[in-house]
Amino acid sequence: MRFRIPGLGAEGIFARMTGDLTDAEFAIPKQIVADVVVYGAPARERDGSISFSIEALTIEE
Image (tube, rainbow, N blue to C red; front, top):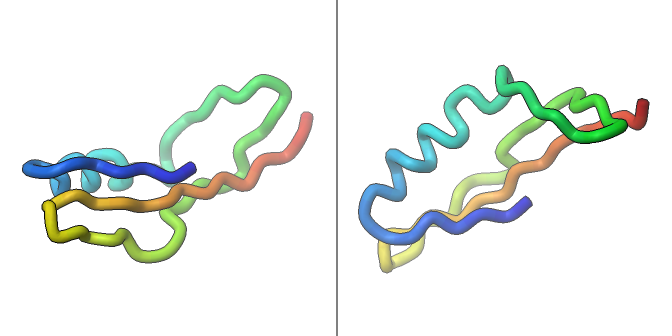
């Protein structure tokens, strides 16, 4: 998944979204989430926004 957080406060929102990501619980029907990570470095844009990707390794039940 790719995300873009606009403008002011983007750093704080990014930190809250990704800080405990590996400990988060996900409910995806018929899937077991084995791992979740922020993929690559976040891109910080001139307008203050941050773009980043999250990847999940899933295993079909």
